[in-house]
Length: 249
Image 1 (tube, rainbow, N blue to C red):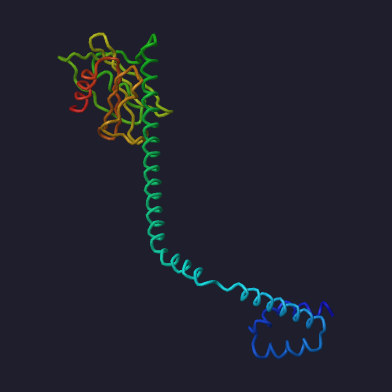
Image 2 (cartoon, one colour):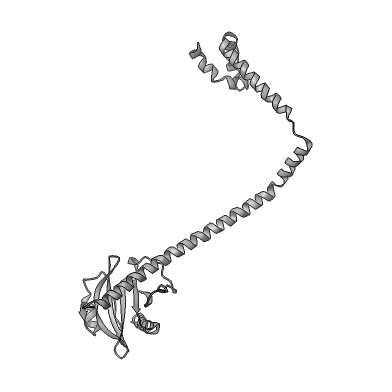
């Protein structure tokens, strides 16, 4: 009997709320009259619903309470404006934070590259054989790199300038092959590193300066799809003058 009534009991609340179709209501009425279990259950639920209704009417809101609710509802537009302003402020802060993080990430990448360039320069100066091809003639140094690196580059003519070409060597920046050229100027060594621009995925800008704690001065520029770095402990004017020679060539 209990198993047979399970399908009816699942619809008791729907039946008591009058949400069944006319035919279903008639069938349920007939079942409740012949089933004491479902009748008792239906009676209990009806009594519970009535008790809730009586309890709800017992605590009718006062006039003062109604006024407070009305004032609260009237103030909602102001709170909505305040909420909108707060959300806009939060969004602005999030955007600013994202831009700051992006800037810091880009700066961190630049600092990493500058640090690697400085390490390569120091390693060259500390080596007993700082260059692989020794020559002051650019027409000797440039062809030496053919077939050793995946790009070609031009070397400026430095005769009748303060700079002297010492030679060149292959180098690697994070496993990326490139060229390193060594120049002398008044007993100072300047390394010029050349890599493919796409192999150094950093957001470079006009103010992409070396880290403040670096003992070297560094200048970087882009030309013909190549990224150049000039680094030395000489003064920035010497580095800039050599960079201009490369850019004019």
